[in-house]
Length: 274
Image 1: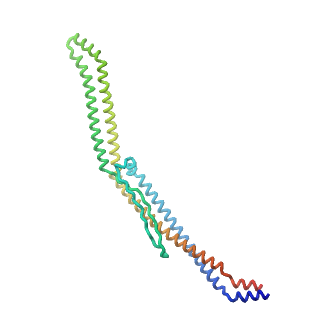
Image 2 (image 1 turned 90 degrees about the vertical axis):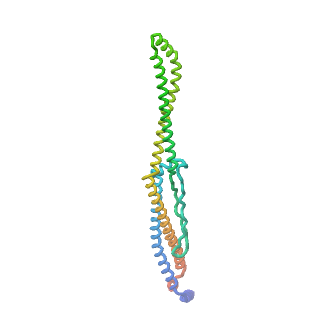
Image 3 (image 1 turned 180 degrees about the vertical axis):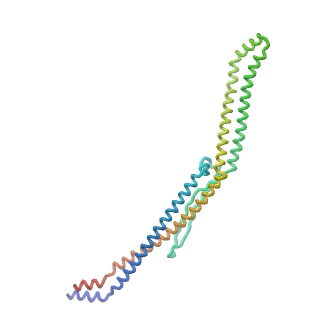
């Protein structure tokens, strides 16, 4: 009993107001923490959507006919530029600072002059191969015509027989003579076909990186720039919201720990009286 009285006397020296104030402060801090957590989640979702929009813009850019055409070419026919990301510093609500880095991407510019040169060269090659094909046909036709004329020009039966014998004797030589001419025709025909295909391919390439396709690519580049800027803004907004939540979380934890650590003297006195 004496011990209880002594403890009661000691406890009465202290106030429970400190603990009540600490608990109130902790509750208010936790209430703010809930609101900041919601804001942080909203900013996270917005940033996630912005990242998805960036990825979609990048997919659209690389899937364009302009880029599909560029992928067919060697580096001699385009210029590749890396649009580097930007490091941006920002200030949080509590005056602390942070930084965020925007995303980079590749931009391509077709070398129209080099492509036009290829078209000019292929046009010339086609003309040369067509001329070679015409010459090969002419030479082959002349060989056959000359052989026939030699027989037709024979005046008498004896001459015709002689010419016929000569033609028969010369048949082997004639075949040997005609064979390379036929080969030349085949080679020239292949040359023409290849030149036509190459010319068509380069004309298709020019169409893929010029006119409406070049305009569409420029529009996609603008969309990519906008997506990069938007994602940087949402990243900074999320970073700030996350920072605010982190600071408030530390404060709430500290205040709750203080409140939990303070003794409830009214309860202690009541316990001694029982």
